[in-house]
Image 1 (tube, helix red, strand yellow):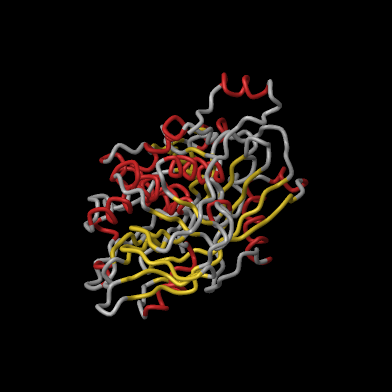
Image 2 (cartoon, one colour):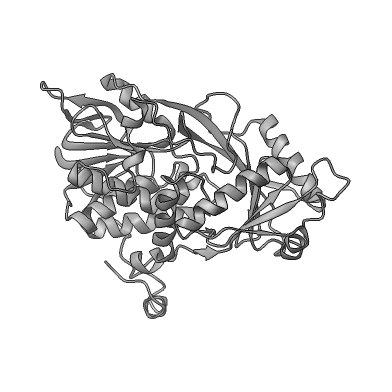
Length: 416
């Protein structure tokens, strides 16, 4: 793999940048692989990378119906954090944040990782009580979360001029999560793809899986695609909002429902926010990108949907909430908007698990899965290699639904 550095940049500048190697290959599709990973998003590519790096499993194909990184990994608000509630959740996300912190160096790819911190704006006393519980639990696992005053909030976010004593929901406190960060979403996919390819993993774009296939003894045997059948010893379904679309082809029912989560960005402006701002009582969150755009998200669609655009009522709710706290933003023009499909488990905790079908694994239910990409791939690779869960994801298995052992996670940004 060609290493990127200041010196390689300068050297290639002399040849008008014609000497760069391709980031990943486009090999011929084989008939059989040891492991097939369906979905070339962040989680699928990270899984392939850690299979090769940590477990020396390289006869792996990542197949994607569209283009690499064209799904939800490119349709999110790039926030990285570990401020969750449950004992089962926090260690997992702490691990993910720590992996992110060193990922640029490990992958030799500039992910534009930026430690920003997140400030939760608290506007109701029930929320404050809930969030203090989260603070105490997080402290056990080494994730930072501390309360600050309203004056300190306004000092750190000068543009936050709303939410005063006469407003509908006055600001009463704030919480700072100093481990929070942002990172370039598509660079995460590209970095993992490049490093996985260097270790022998094959990536096949424009290869749509029509159905899963099983052998006579009930094991998973491979997939049917638009390019013909592919057999495999093990198959991992890592396709974000469309997990059930594939698993139902082998009569496997999962406790998932699909929702559309939308976001939008403003026109670029001068730097005005250097933290991630989250307003859980009003259901809106925002940050400012390196290009100066305000990146804004809100609640998901109220009903199940496979849509990938934005619903006007959801957009209006998010804008109204934001303008209550940042009234000066009313003159900004919207630059673009988008939506992505999420499959959400009944307890709002992800599923990383083997299934009742031998050889078939799923990684699904990611409510804001961008922050979980490194740990999600790390632990799914361990599960595939050993057929036993890593201790970080043992509570995330499908077995928890057999006995109502739910991990009821209220630490999601815009929990329903």
